Image (cartoon, rainbow, N blue to C red):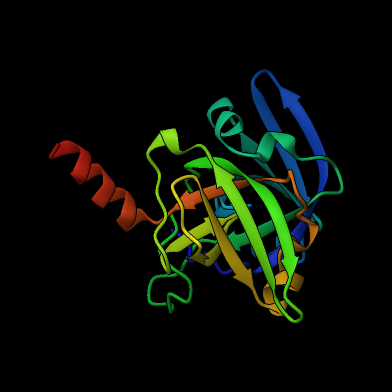
Length: 196
């Protein structure tokens, strides 16, 4: 379980394919605090630490993860949003995030608002995921509030701190992002389809 509050930006240092799996090595300042078998969200994808060496650790993404997220698009040198799992008893500063990406979306525009930024995203609405105005959404692991909610698109407003401390500052039109829709909204949507 995560909160969507990004702790750090890691840098992809190595990528190695083995059968259908992708081993991803990340350089991070938090590496020395990690342990084998620990869960870390990478752009919102919960992955398990399988090895640690110096300031670099490795996680493995399987085919299911590669098919449903942007993890397979990573290149050496890319920045990735990192968050360790919540500790029981900590404040929930973002919202309830499972680290299970529902689908990818595409950045359709970035507007500088003279001190903040508005990012627009589109997604495939046939997968039954929805947003609501002022509801929660996780974009590349970052907990955000939805504005301009539509059937297959939404926007988010980013403050300077978030812009500087996440990989949002690398987004441009066409950037593919991971989306995890609000878990409460998913249950409500599922109940509505069962009752129809």
